[in-house]
Image (cartoon, rainbow, N blue to C red; front, side):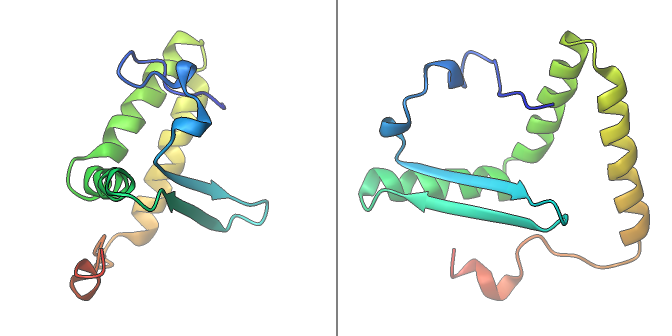
Length: 113
C-alpha cells in the first residue's frame, strides 16, 4: 500500500515541494536494507522543522500514530489483510529481538541531535 496521510492536519494533498523546509525520508531497497535521507533548509525555520521531526519520532510517539493511520487507511481501502500481514511481520521482528536490550537513541548520541 502506497498511501499518504489524508488527515486534515497533514495536508499532504496540498503540499508543494518547494515549500518544504525539512524532510526525513525512510526507505527500503530491494535487498531489504533500510536507509534514510534527511534534509533541511539552512535557516532557523529549517532547523526548527528538522528538530520537530526528530522530537516527534523520539519522544512524541509519531511511529505509533503513523501505524494507527496505516490501519485506518487499510480499513477504508478494504485492505485489512494487508494490515494484518504488516502486524504479523512486526510481531515476528519483536519475537526475534525479544531479550535484546535496545535503545532508540544511545545516550552518547543525544548531544549530537
